Image 1: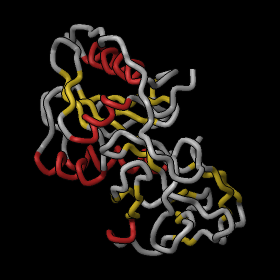
Image 2 (image 1 turned 45 degrees about the vertical axis):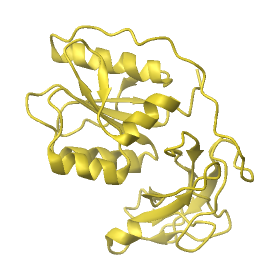
Image 3 (image 1 turned 30 degrees about the vertical axis):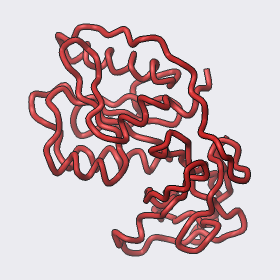
Image 4 (image 1 turned 45 degrees about the horizontal axis):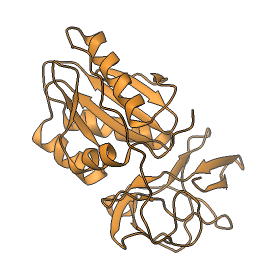
Length: 241
């Protein structure tokens, strides 16, 4: 299971339970930042792009990748950076067990072929996406609590997904808004678009590690970047029924 720590706001003294997000390495193994249960959360006073990232090393293949730095929003309005094991970094650990490094990637059970539904309406696009999320291994897929600026939001345990059945490619703002929503919920995010993505939107998704999919009219989502390819290979890391 992913690591969970208590995070206390230094401004109002509220305590929050924070669970480290799990990200897929390109080798297929899950990775997560190492949280420091004895550390002190620090308020975010000013946004600096470089400070919003942390390098996490995969214990299976040794690759290092930059992922969003863990943060949690407090009800008093303060955004807190969750303390990590090492200043400015994260200790390598197995994201599934939280223990010392393992030497083999996580085995993934074979999935049956995806059964698509033809897309004729926006509702069909939502249905196809919900079925695809279940095929990936996410359970109890539902409408998201927060409505996205465009399209329809779906959610399951550990993930939020945006379905854009519009006629125009998804924009940079669409991708960034989805990422910010996922950050506030400590969840992974996925984007499904019927019309594809603007070039800057796709570049930002690649930088943030957001899986992008294009829906065709047969209802079969097609991965269009590396994070999406990895997710299709590994499936969801949380398969709780």
